[in-house]
Image (cartoon, rainbow, N blue to C red):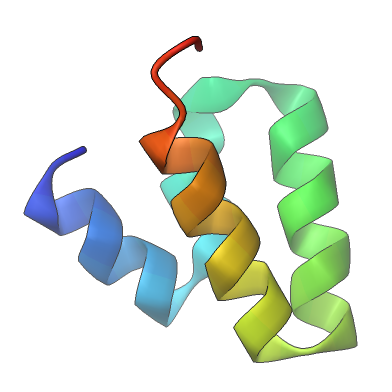
Length: 52
């Protein structure tokens, strides 16, 4: 996880997970619509997952 992805996850979470697949983008986008903090947390969790 690069520092640029972390900064992007804080500024606009759906754009940070664009390389992780369509499902991740949709989940993070919906959580960002519900609130900025849940979107940031989800993006950071998805970015920190080494499996994908």
